[in-house]
Length: 276
Image (cartoon, rainbow, N blue to C red; front, side, top):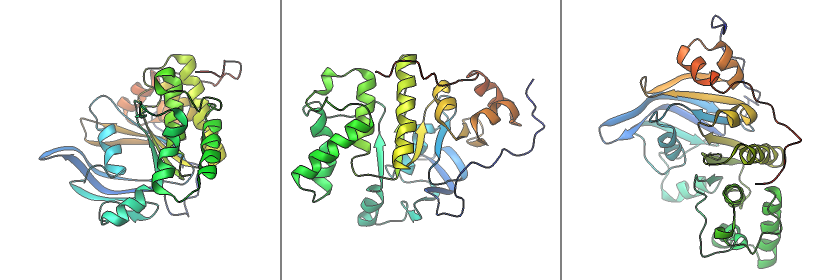
């Protein structure tokens, strides 16, 4: 039986003296008069891998879209590396958005461009890098996600796992220190999902980026997440926050313990094939 009498969860391993990568202050979000989440307060420290988790309809993706500046909140503030993306004017907002990369659930690759062209596009549009420098950087990003040699492949020639990794590479194009991954393992078989989790951990290790994920894939959450922020549609807010295994075993909220217990205990297996 889980021990739900424990005090608060252990503090996440991070530099809490630094400016947080993300800080959410008294945030309420929704559509028109419909409030989806309210009174949210949390901060994500540099270098953490944090998963936003909750049942269907709890507002995970809505929260992500607000944090990356696609929607304006009903109330409150969102700070990215200490700068408000809510109160920024258009010029400042573009500057803030240039500091992070996003990998969307479906990959969002341009079907008419090959893989190298997809990765190069943000570099061509947003930097003054010369063509040779761009080619070099494209190769580096593809190597980081184990897609070196696939530069000339079209998106239609790639498997589902390769498209996800290509989306990671494009999110990394401008060397951001903050990454957002929307449902990275959705629709993948278990071995491919495990490979993707290893890539996420490699990205963090090699780039020292902060990563926020939105996912409901419990095996992936236990494999890669330092911390889970658990949302509830019923309570319209955060019901618990901490390392996933700790929340599974010790959360004072029965819903959180039950939800995470479906995930069991997961270990990465170094003998599993590294392909997807």
